[in-house]
Image (cartoon, rainbow, N blue to C red; front, side, top):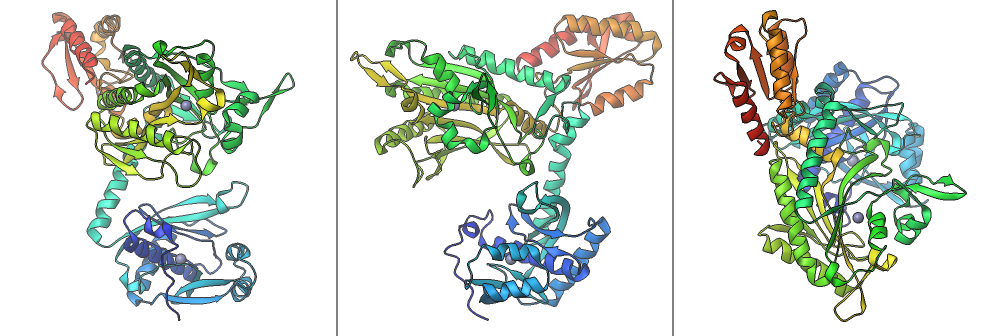
Length: 591
Ligand SMILES: [Zn+2]
Ligand SMILES: [Zn+2]
């Protein structure tokens, strides 16, 4: 046994959310898991498993899937291993010894890792009990130090994340220093699961994704479409009010455009293959910026024309590995709420301030708290001069200060072409989601030669700001579904009210009420199915519709309604006009 290696060259451990101690705990629990699995299922081949945010996983190759009973048995065996308090032993060896050892055990995944180390090189193991793993640590002193843990679920995972490889089984788990922390974490997971936008998207009939179409390509159903339409309408009206101009650009473009922009050089991995049009290669657009530059370039601009604020709900397509696709939140085709601002250097700070103001307005409308990060110049690879970086970064910083927004510094976290402000939303259950971004581009104006004529009569390079505030409609709506748990406020609810007749005698009055409310601008449905009232009420509750308007012969007689507000219960009877006005007011006030 030798001294454990230093953690100096382990940025992954240093950066682990929760710190090094939690890394050791979860990494050790992952070994306890693999140890239990190999004891119970000797035919299993082990691949690998690191700590990940919130827990850990370990990948196994097993001919048949792990059943829930298997997982219970594994967890029980893990508890025995913890009770046995086996020390984690650190062992140094040669790559040749390791190859011989894992070849003898037909551990082909371990042999793959070893194939990347040159002959004669050194490798390290950690061993606890009979389980030995190729491993760089770090670990706890012994399995007995593992306290509160839980296997959470099992899912398929391609070997090396490549869908052309075989599917392994990935067992996920988590571990905490105390049972109380574990319990809180599990409760949080359960809450997140209840709000999962993929599940709510199905239940509320918002969107779907289809094998026939391809993964990561979202279809918006009428209800999801209405939600999106209302958000987009709100977005557009607010942009127009603040001096933005709406533009539209094509979905495909000749490769020449992406040669000029540098996307072919720098972003080829995320662009889809070329298609041939009249012998010329074209691409589906990965970004909207070049199109907006084309529009700017159609005429000469003087400093008096600036700033110009072009806004587009622009649909782009980018390659994402299939393994990371997730409902609406991580997709291959999405609509950015994009804008590019062309301004003079003197105008930059005010423009950023205006963006922050708009962002705050939009996010507050959806009841989000948020945190700002100022990301500065990367250490190694970057474009533009030091002076340009300093100027642009300072403009972003000053705007944050003037808006009174606290920010965290993300040193070196800028894009290679731009310093930026990244903003994370905090949702109703405390999770953070990166959505808005504001970037000062130090590259494209040069590549395209984007200029304006200054007061000195000479041409100067324009300052170009990219910004998206929702990020993309898909992602923003997916996150919003989870934020609200599908309980949309009246102003964006796809259906604001459903009218339900108490019995067949009230059917006509119900239909008439729905018609009247619809004419008054409400999004309303009448449930006139030949079904019991209680069943209809239950359906409306499941659909999370804000208002249920039950009407019977008494209401028909009086010309009133007796609405029930979700979350508030039964309201006093009121005239149909009063109800209409109430919902209109809530819509105006965005409640
Ligand atoms: Zn390990
Ligand atoms: Zn852009």
